[in-house]
Image (cartoon, rainbow, N blue to C red):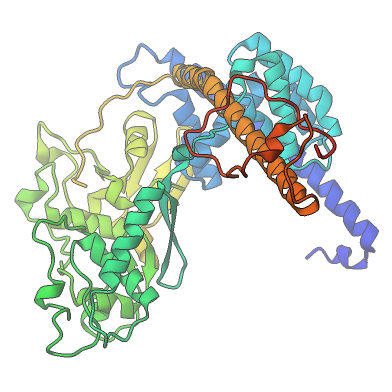
Length: 531
């Protein structure tokens, strides 16, 4: 492939990189224009059907996002961002879009422009911003991301100060906790919390880690890591020494669960051979992903086992709500939402009847059986019910989707990759959910602009205080340096009538947290030593 590149020198290869980068920008612009045109088409259709019952509960934006997600194999969130960006380029930044179509800028820069100008609400103002940025964007070649952000923010602030994003100074706004699967059976835990909460968490882990006997073979770091699971389950850390008389061994009184603690349930899906035998087939840990067979058997040792049985009695098949066993079988088979490109975990999805259940005459509608149920997240459940998408489910769990434009997509259960025969409460019928993207966007922008107005004065006061603190510390350090120099070179108090503070005691060079600057303007510091 691309054998012609082998004969090119370095200069020729760089030219290919440059030309393909420009062509890529032009292709992105064409795709975004097509998405924007599709959005206009879907919105127009939704408006024409506004008087018909059952339609427009899924509006034109969601219809467009669903089709884009299916054809590009994107998640619903990613498709939503793409449609929103395309709409912004089409309606708000047409001159910037024209530059992208000509290959005179790239998608990285345009994406920054979209995100940094979204709070400009007035059409006339955004037109000015579009004109200003389009005239300047050609000079930004080679600029860093931060330099582009600064330039866009400056342009926005000049036109509409209320739309300029205020940086969050308060660290509390960025507190979070997250986990990231490492792919080797372990997970990385990361986050940002208040100092007091972190200190308490750190002390509690150390307390649990030190409650085992001295014969425990684990290091302190390993015991602290294991203590996290004990803390989550509301018990003390079990010792790993293996001695029968150890008071903190597993199952002993010292390692018992707190009766009042909250129990946390996690689900693991695995085959019977892996659980009860020596099979090597992997398992699936809900919220994490694939784990190896040995880890499955370690979890089985302390877990409650549920055998998945999708068999449904004739009477249960005529009930709308599936049994707990049937629901568990469907979720374990699908593992995720079954709409093309969607990866929402099955535990957070509705259980949907592919052939609709007939409430008036259950025997005439779709039965509540394994072959007629699948997992759909709420958004795609609504899309199927009100958005014109049709689905057919095969006996092996495969779902064939047909979009409103007639394109077909096929999805298979995620468990098919793990098990040869895979097998929240089930949902009720989705209710109509009329939304207006334009009203939601206007409300969000209004909230963000109001936050900017409130935050700007707070940030300005905080910046003035921080600057005053820096100046005060610098002044104290200067005065202390002069005092040290006076003592080193003269060894006696200064008799100069200027800067009499040089004879005062040394000042602390750290300020208390409640320090406030004096209203009086201090005397300027001298250029030369005052002695």
